[in-house]
Length: 141
Image (cartoon, rainbow, N blue to C red):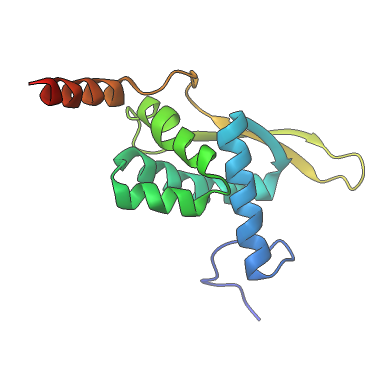
């Protein structure tokens, strides 16, 4: 049996478990900004989170709902769309970085940290605040 044309890693899990694993890792990355996991999981998470960030950067209702579906919590989805994505608008891709760190003591697995390339500040997006001020000004007229 050959693996030609089979994309993605299985991680010894069934489909639902794999999806839940990636969803959990992505949620942790959004909440904490940097996580440590095994190198293969980190590389697979890059594929998953890059697509979510691209959707979050568009920011319309349909893409916001897709981001909510792709993460475990709504709070993490709102943080990705409202705080993180506006700070990554200067990039078209390559939003996260994977760095090998150490070998895990128990089984010798290669560990890696995955983090956002740009420094993420905790302030909400200024573009949303400007849009909110414009709608408030229209309402007062």
